[in-house]
Image (tube, rainbow, N blue to C red; front, side):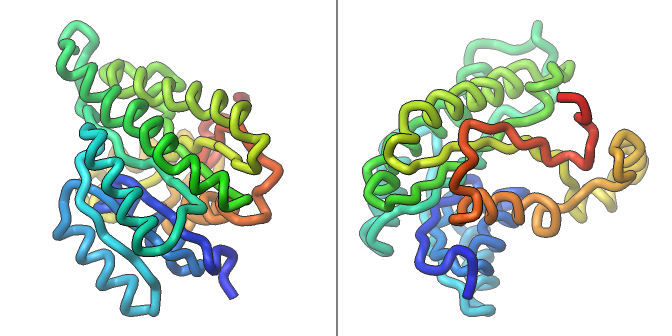
Length: 250
């Protein structure tokens, strides 16, 4: 028996990176997962991988800056699976290095629309089903870039800190319906990063208390599974640093 058997999850930004890894681990723990992203071919690759071990996954193409497409994802998920128990917001655009004086209105709005606004719209669309579920779970994604005020990531960090504020507000408003709302801030690595940026990886490892940088599947996704399960039912409105101890005094 998996921790998430008979639960239905929506994972945004699931075509690559943290989103892909989280979606896969949710399926491994028994959840039926609706995955969305712009790149349908990447979603279909993930679905094949998950179905190979007996998992259940539905891919839906979605540009999260379009409210109509967000509505369509939730509508298709409910039509296919009958409801929504878990929402994991991972989609985010405007992630390039860009000093504040080079951030124009268009780029700033892209960061906001693809991150904070998209997260809120998904939460609103899923709310009736999460309320009906009786154990609704929302897990949002922020970033140490926003928490630390990392130079060159002003637009991105602004959007990510807005997501943390949104998380706290939803936790206060929706807790009465049994819905928990949390946010995690991951500092993890991928195989591509390990291969292409070994010196940057060494520098990052040196900053951690554990002297290693974790991966999505082994170090990040288990927290998401915990928060999405009954075990995490008393935790809400919290920010979880998944960073190997880089932020030891927050």
